[in-house]
Length: 306
Ligand SMILES: Nc1nc2c(ncn2[C@@H]2O[C@H](COP(=O)(O)OP(=O)(O)O)[C@@H](O)[C@H]2O)c(=O)[nH]1
Ligand SMILES: [Mg+2]
Image 1: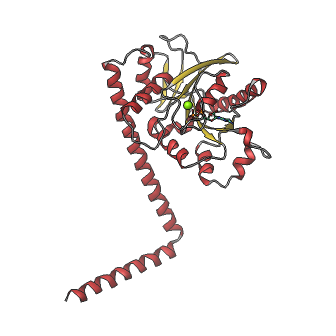
Image 2: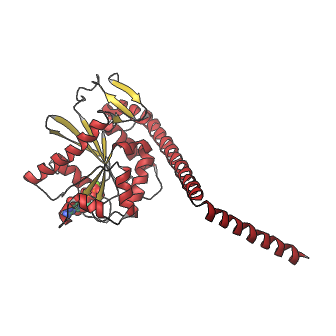
Image 3: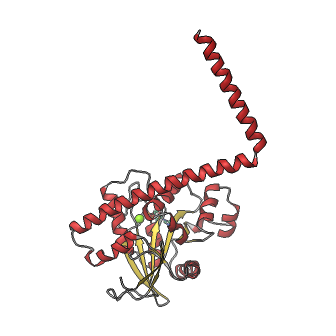
């Protein structure tokens, strides 16, 4: 942990971590996030250029636990963390907190980039739920490290991905791309050989450009720092200490959820305030109408109570 130079809360710069020789400033940690079935595991396999993660069409979730895979690309060690269904619209239970805790441990001391995987042409309400869950799980600051990764790129026939994103009438998708700072890329996960390598190089260009913007800093928080200590224990039966770590995971996720709700409420209030000021005449008229209606109602109540 001595090699971690804390800059600001949320991002950290990476020196040489003394107790783990595999870490170096050229290492890159990626987490795959998104709803079930969008192609996270298939995307992980495309990045690793090998079928490491189980990926198939199924009514049930195929990926049951968090898993990691590594690859060397242009001399860089890339760690890819695949996630199970922890970003769905269902109450978080102990098994899900365990999966979240494992995800923290596998990607400790924190990810450089998160890939929000979504199927091209299918950005639905479930994807929006997943996006919200990602913020609850890691904290809202994680958006600064997010890249949208569209799968099923072979479905794009007559236009480029840029044209598709520019021309889409799916406002939610536009908002997502905006929230992710306009960073996106597309994969055809059925691609093999040269085509597969070419699309990996394309993704890495987007990732490295973001790394440049962030000056190589990765995303971190207190949980990631603690999770670093459990890295060597992984694979063993969780002991009492790990269970206490999972309790902290639960507390932190609940706190982040509440912060997010508070943030959304204040954003909504801010929007209402802005609208009122920009439509001051109409707002005054609506207010007068409400007051007159209340006066009539009170008057009616008084006359009918006698
Ligand atoms: N045709 C096509 N199928 C894909 C692509 N990406 C994923 N899939 C398929 O979508 C299904 C679900 O993918 P999977 O990786 O298991 O999704 P996950 O639940 O998000 O991990 C599998 O049948 C994949 O083969 C893609 O780019 N093109
Ligand atoms: Mg999967």
